[in-house]
Image (cartoon, rainbow, N blue to C red; front, side, top):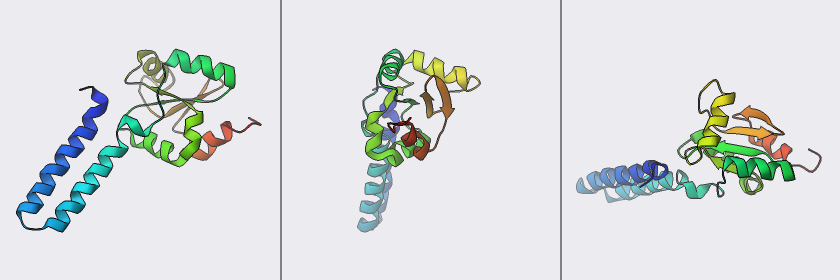
Length: 145
């Protein structure tokens, strides 16, 4: 198992344990609700929620060609998840780099964030923006940008 699946797996396991405990106490409704909650949390923390990641070099090449921003992210990051959800369908138009899978991407993020892997970090025209708002990122996708 790779580390990007650890958090979802732990959430499913924890949910099963908590739900089993509640069911053993006879509270089937609460057990089912808790299990669904944990499953939902696991689902949004899987790499499947994000558009397919590319390497940092590929993302930079594509961004130079089409002018679209590059988003550096990692699984389990709530700020990345919030950005992804708020972007909606617009997220598919961005170039996503998973820093846990790409050492070059992780190095690029550390270089602009004082040695920290602070994500999401969005590069637009070679300039880094750490944890920008979804509205701002969406504006960078507009034809006028």
